[in-house]
Length: 238
Image: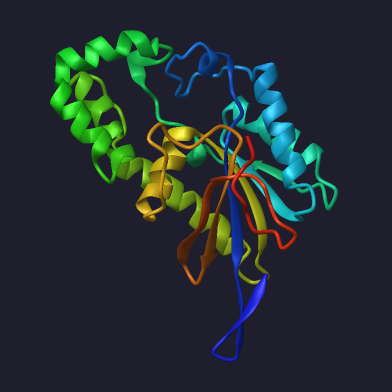
C-alpha cells in the first residue's frame, strides 16, 4: 500500500504476524522450541479459522520458519484465501528459541525446578515486569548456567533482521506479507516495539499487524483476529 507523505508516495509493508496453530506438544503442556511437533486437530481448525478471517487480504508473499508447524499453519491459512495464492518461503531467522536440554520438558516439572533455582520472588518480579517476555526468556537462561540458550536481545535481533530484509524487498510497492512464526520469538519482537503482550505470550493462530515504512516498524494491533470491513482488527469473539 502507498500513502502520501510530504507530497510523495511512500510504500508501506503490512506484516500480518501469526504464531503457529496448537501442536501436540502445546496440548501436552510441554516446552517446544526447535522440536518438530505436528498440529493437533484443534490447531488445524484454528489455522483454517484465521484463514477465513484473512481470506480477502491479498498477500504478496508468505514467510515461515524452517520448522514444520509454521509451514503447515501457513498452508491452512492461505488455502482459505480468496484473493491470491502467494509464494511461500522459509527463513531460519524466524525459528523459535532452542530450549536445549529442556526441550519437551513438562511445564509442571519446570515450575519446581525454576522455584528451586531462581526463587519465587525473582519469578514474580519477572512476570510483573513491563518487559515480562524478555524477563521470561532470561529465566530460561538462568535455570542452568551450562546450557547455551539465546537471550531476548538476540531473539529480537533475529526477528528484526528477518522482517527488515523482507520489508526492504517490498518497499517499492508495499503490500501485505503473512509471517508465520513462534510464540517466544514473536512475543519478544512485539514487546520490543512496546506492543502489549499477554502474560503467557501471544495466542496460537491470532494475527498481529506491524507496519514497516522507511526502515521503521509500527505496531497496529496485537493478538487479534476479527476484521472489520475496512481490514482493521476487532477483538475476537469467543
